[in-house]
Image (tube, rainbow, N blue to C red; front, top):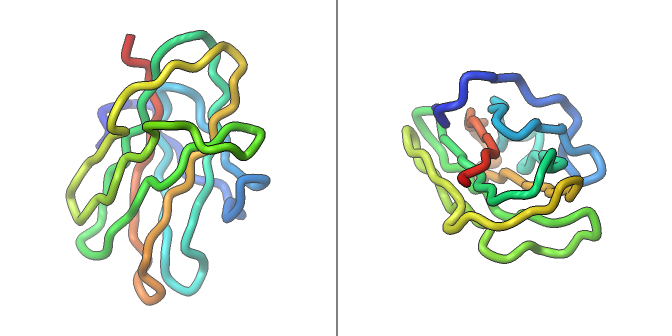
Length: 130
């Protein structure tokens, strides 16, 4: 869905920032979130160059919602303008604005679901927009 050809599956466990699955810029990762197995997945990107990036989140399921909630740096501080919002079944969302990263900067995104009974499949990708 997020229009990026290079797709991979998430690595478990990735329920915390310290367990984040690494994503390459331009790569899409598929996963599931919610249900009794866990309500959040974390992903890490280390910027290969300076530039403006966005995150794209797609709900690839037929029920439930997913949220790309937070983007934080390696220091745990929230990075402004990084929320993609809630994606309902079949929807794709992206961060509200691109934001500038420096080469080597670490970004950590969490994908969450509020469902404790249903797992929701999704795809997340990070890409440059400049």
